[in-house]
Image 1 (cartoon, helix red, strand yellow):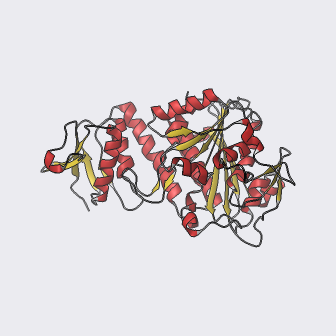
Image 2 (cartoon, rainbow, N blue to C red; image 1 turned 120 degrees about the horizontal axis):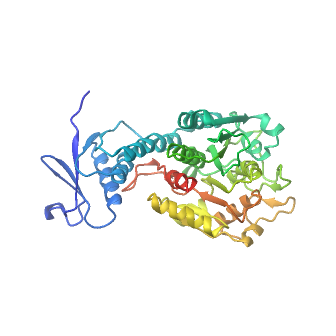
Image 3 (cartoon, one colour; image 1 turned 90 degrees about the horizontal axis):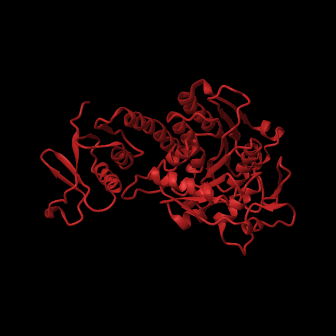
Length: 427
């Protein structure tokens, strides 16, 4: 059925006093006006778009002076996880139009994928969705391998196999190579490693329901890095990049891993499991070992890894950890350029000593006397990065998913972080 769109215009003038002192949205005979006086205009547009969606308006037409970033801010607020929305976009120049189209395709893919129920997204399905997107964007420059089930154990991916073996759905590892050079011997510029836990019960360290109900989103790191690589390719990436997605369910069963189990990794490290809900770092370790062997200039991992990072930053910032000050600053600059929120949290050499075990090289959680949970989790990962002091970034994806709507975002996935990492890959 054809509907008549609601016209949306922008104004730098304050709203008429009748609408209230802080009104950002008013109506008249020709449609709705968003008032940009005072504050960040992009944030105002996103909040206004959320209000428009909240009023049940499902077809809008953007009229007047809408540039790329203002159009994108509107979509970020207007988009929701339920129902269809139609936008008649204002005309953009060719370059901005291409960028906007890429964002709509790729970042919406990220948000849609994270929002999928776990029933509809098994570990293998996540790897195949990622392949489909990247093949669509990168064409024959993309090659890949998916390893799953007992093949992981036979090939020594013991962290991923151990975490995933308790589910009836096999764990899966995607190793993908984007090589635009056509040279099989070309150096690898960057490696990306994403946590793809498609549902996390906590295992035998069982989560309460209030903490488990959003755990379909525990693959947010994998989706974010897939989107980042896709967007960088769409923007013209000419360097070779490899991607690993470490995908599994963390379930409770007679075959699930237990507290006190010891995992032996291919780099010689042994890890004692003292909390089965600290499983993300166990699967990422396998991907980081492979990535380190490529000797890349840049190694980035992303994961919805700790509640500690979310306690520190809420859902408003992604947490960034690195021993490389210059690289951390480069990502923060990329994030600022893309209007995405990142915040650096501490990571020091002493954090690497916070994981003592009586029976293995490492414990998968910090000792009770060490309460910096997000930093100790990052430090755990550093033990699987060959050159962890230079060229490595860890992103704890606190801003990936919201359990409820707020004034700028609907409930569900945000897609934040995709643009910042894509920007960094193109520097």
